[in-house]
Image (cartoon, rainbow over all chains, first blue to last red):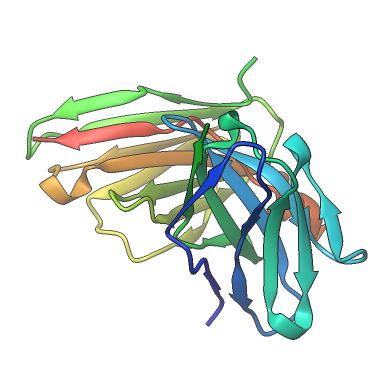
Length: 111
Length: 117
């Protein structure tokens, strides 16, 4: 069965520090992968997506993610975190008309 | 202009009541979805409609009935509300067609927080 796993439930980083949020997937074929962000009380906003091609994808708000087939991973990174990045982050994989979400990683940012 | 809008934003009701949540998208998309986010933030798809036809119907109690009067609207009606229905419900939409990219990029509403007392 298709699945997406986010091993970290909660991560705390200092403002200005680098960030990496982990995501592992289990799909039979080439996966279509996404990262979404949910700010408190808000809906989900698409940060970036991977369908094919270049394995390093750039997204909005300075985020990037790297698809590594050998590790079944699609980790999200940001070189310098801002306090406004504090939110819940969801990795998702796509099947036909259906997104399967990981359980999310809550990011806290300390000054 | 909000792309995917849900109403109401908050809904507080008693057990046993019937309630509806409305969703509208102005993106011209063909496919719409309902997701449930539980208290642990886990998101799970409930339903999906493509051009007003039901294409995904996950294991959801039949007290939940989606209705799509046209492809821009997908409403969720819930009968006989139970405590366990308390959650945040998200509507989403995506472009139809055969292209994987268009089909799988989903745009989400801000959510409806349902509290059943």
